[in-house]
Image (tube, rainbow, N blue to C red):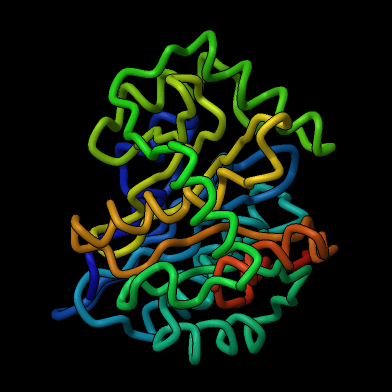
Length: 290
């Protein structure tokens, strides 16, 4: 098994709130299910891109079934009306999802929605999968002196304002307050990375990425300066991230979802496809209890 996903590790989960845990084990394997109770719902996760099950050693379906029985018992005792589990994208663990997701369906869970997620394998050069229009923008930006840089010590006043303005311009909001973003960045310095594209020492594009585990890096936020959009510095941003990740031994760059509760943003999806990314599904399961 790969090293645990950051979002399922105890240090990350505990800093989010009132964590609870169910577990089952055998002589050679164990499974844990971290969750939160909020307003009559069991949620996995609370404030993370995904939750689901954390396996130790060989994943065992019978142990998951045992945890699901515990979960139902707890839910009925606490008069919980909904259990919600957000899975990681299918590309993370296809060999597990092939049996894990059908197991949930057989236990009475239904797919509430599926989001469209995009990722790039880093076994080939970044330019290989680029659409010709994005390849032109990348080449032109480099010719004009745009450059990718890692940002070791973010200026949080500028950083948060830059992220917020870019998101609001596109009709989105930031899922994290500034204090939470800064605190999480400080608590996990080896996992959280800020990077940017600069033109004449001015930041014109920015990304916050997270090392999910030793093989997967997740692009959590991206933002850009509208005045430089003609050359799409976000393309150079992703090239820089891909090269940096490859140097660290990371095999996959997760570009995130292009939908919200199953409703696809076609423009964002097209852009990620133009970056050479491959689509997979990120499923949210629910079980309603009467």
